[in-house]
Length: 290
Length: 323
Image (cartoon, rainbow over all chains, first blue to last red; front, side, top):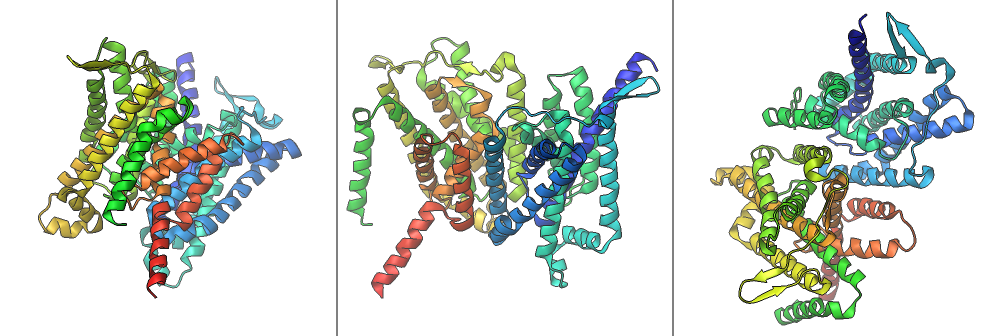
């Protein structure tokens, strides 16, 4: 390959890796929104929390794989507790109150993280087996990013399997389109909500833990990931998984190439793109309901 | 409360505000000005949240554009007078609301919150990146606050803390009065009626989109004024501080803690948060931890805020007295 082609491919892979991470976060966000009508402002904060857990578990055990396994699960459990004890009590007050609760949670997580881990950037070391470079036809590329892409694809496939082939998936899809009807059919929707919330947070947690070595772990992580994931969900359409997937990949590439060619404009471009979509389709590209 | 008592209380409050510079140090004087600015800012948010029933999640964009407009005008035009400076801030906030209102009146509920958040982030990122104009993270220094000039009469130096205190308080109190009056007009009732039953208002022949749009512009304009006074007080306008997401959350917390069901709720909330900050900062740096906890507790247990709590206690009390 010519050097330019190599450069372009590398950027494309960078964009793909970031896009997949965004999708992991955004998929939980959009599922939760679709089912419960909650815009979870604290979603990326949970991802950040998982990244910090990952750092700490790794410090204790010294094993990246254990950390990668445990950190998202802890985050998911905290997510379940949050849903049960903070979100469910205000459910009857309407979506605005739920939204505000998540704002409060976001602030609390940020402050707690600063309290326990400090404000400096923490570095999560990649294990030996993932840290090298790999040669693919003239292109040298870090293995870890390929691992991120592979892991995300695996989880994506796994989620699709659950969503489209199991009973739980059927209930979730039904609840996205009409939660009241599902509840009337005798299904314990609060339990389903709690499960989905937990899984959504777990997905974000995986993304956060995996992103740790890429972005370093710092208190501003939630803002960075959260805003991008937020754009993905808004542009893709509230509650639409397909929309989130397409837009996440698109934004990943936009980010990667934008940083290369118009470094200053790249973030502005992203929000301008969102404003443009919203001006013509206020519900997002694939969104169907408010 | 009977009317004479109420007037006496207002008079006492007014006298307190007048005498304050003699009673407290400059530090507390600054705090009171900040409290007043954020009261106005939170009330403009409540004009949307409490009265129209939509959550402006990116209210900082109005506040921030007002502040930036003032800083830019003072930076580039030498000898720009004081009152027009405020008008520039008001114009900037109002204009932004006017530009966005065709989009914003179409949606409500969560979609409104997200749209406002989206646009405020767009403006925030743009301000952060275009450092030639906005100074990026460093911001713009407001080097000289212009004197208050009434041609032929007086010229009052605004670099004096006490003078500035009176000026800022006068602006804020006037704006609050105007907004209070605005909510009491028939138009203000239309807005509340749209919140409670939009379908009926539509059938009655009211132009919903127009009414909402006007309310948005009013809210944006006064938020712009709050931002303008803030710029003059802080003498520094930077993206983190006037445009970031925390600046959007602050008035939201104030409005909610004070109570969104009442005009004065956000003012109470602003007072509570500023006092709390003054106390908490002596013990810990983690103000957000305290604020966040209080905020969650209020949303969970007192959705009508402090004012709502007080009035529910009052109702219980009078019910007891009667029985």
